Image (cartoon, rainbow, N blue to C red):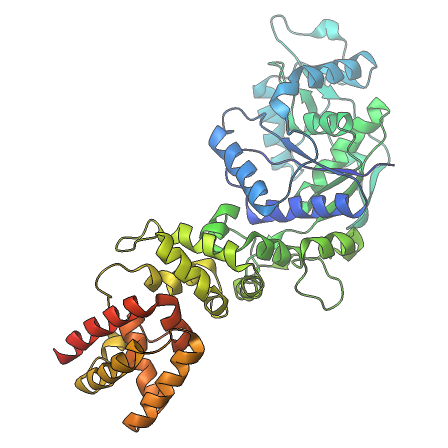
Length: 469
């Protein structure tokens, strides 16, 4: 059997973090078993589905590197097929026409609630003679669901789950206006797409009992189901916007690498030994559904940030430079030209050791693209004193005749510290303030080398003027 999985989001909003994990699990499971991963956009809710949401979903999956093996299927284009199957069920006696009015359905719900019963359709048109149909009423089509026994699903995550058929009513598969219902359309699409495994959130588990009845009524092979627990916030409540970033692209904007987010989501509800950092190839090699837990996983932003920092340290300097430059270009007071690019690239091996996100990385690199006056923060200004000015003046003289390599710069600064009878740090901090406007940067030798002799001396001279008041 060829393994075929699918991710089937509704384009009514952003791709949330829970949906991203579901897509990832489907992708990895298919790849692990040498199968195919497919995408279906379930856009049958025309009132709420938007082109912007569809674009955001596709962009999110592209950013995460979760590429489908076939062109995306849009559910809205398949209404005729959904109707065809509903009519086939009707012709086979597996479905029937229901003429119950909206008022009757409302009364059924209210009566059930008064009696403490779950509100469900009472089956009044199930065996009734169609000749009794009221004139001028277009019927809905309902599935003739079994009333005796149980519906059992052997779930690959939840185990054997069952429900008494008496607890399920005859669901509508085709509305009176001729449009198919979501639960019916999903089954038809999964069958026609030859989906072998339906991997989705456990909030869909109750839908599965109804959906398998359509498979059985049509005589179709059922896919295997795997319902994965939802993601909760740190407080144990269902994850929502109040817990932090919600849409996948928000995580991108906050400076997380897609590899880091996928790595974190993989370990959020799935386990394999003690390995925490897994690349895509390792994830494909190891992932299977037997490692998915049944309990809800809790989002931990501190852990995600740690994982992101590890990935940043291991990411190619050229790629990180491009990411940083893209974030610096919109900022006022910066000139992101070839010179700035060269500076950032040369210092990247040191910058990335200190950053947890790409936003932090860009913040730490911004001084390399400064044009004109360096803005000094409060801590930097504490080092721009008359004493600092004297040290900077002496350093500037020595640096003017120094080969501008990190090794030569380090030697020159050490010599100046000895000549001035101060510790190296007492020279490094005024220099750092002069060059970056802050008291935090990579090693002062590599920082000077990245800026180059001319720019370094220009910034030092400007800081001396500020320090002298």
